[in-house]
Length: 295
Image (cartoon, one colour):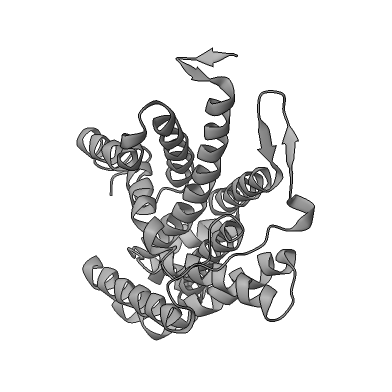
């Protein structure tokens, strides 16, 4: 049996696949947080609740309305985006320009309200969600068995991250979004509807979280607390990558997922501490994060 630093190759490869799977979720969720903070300057604690709503939307659309998983990949993020747009227009917009603490407290309160409402109707127990039949099963790679759904989840998450990065960095829409954070009044002079642009930005960040919730639903049980259990780690990912950095969110998410997996193989008790230990080191050496820029 092939061993790598005292660990069987099969066990190491399996953990690395799990690490890439978790890292893809971290990247997708932290990407939404990065977009919202980078363009709106809002520390959005509602993001974990949006992730949960996406998973529950997929669960209800499938079990109650009979929609397929593939339809839910489009419909559930759209539902979350609509919810995010309503919250931004009704509540969050009033706090732009104020201290970031107000936005943090508001979004934290909204997250608790959403989680409490879901617990009221569905309880605290998790709900199972079936893997699509076409993605069930595994493939034998010779040194490990690769679950088809995990491979799909990694691929689709990375694809969404790449497309988002390309749009923000290399399109006119992305240029307008970045300009809106620098000088919104000047952008309005050129005829751009800045309030609508900001609403769409917040809605898009929510849609990314909702999409992650749909992809996560077949792997993790759908429960009201699934977002709360994940959001703290995702914030650590965003801080490590650099607040507002799209590239940093993607790279640090994948990096942390992989390092967590390696920690579970070589030193299991440290696995849950890895994100926060790395965050502490990064903040000490580079307070702006790995890819963050100065004001």
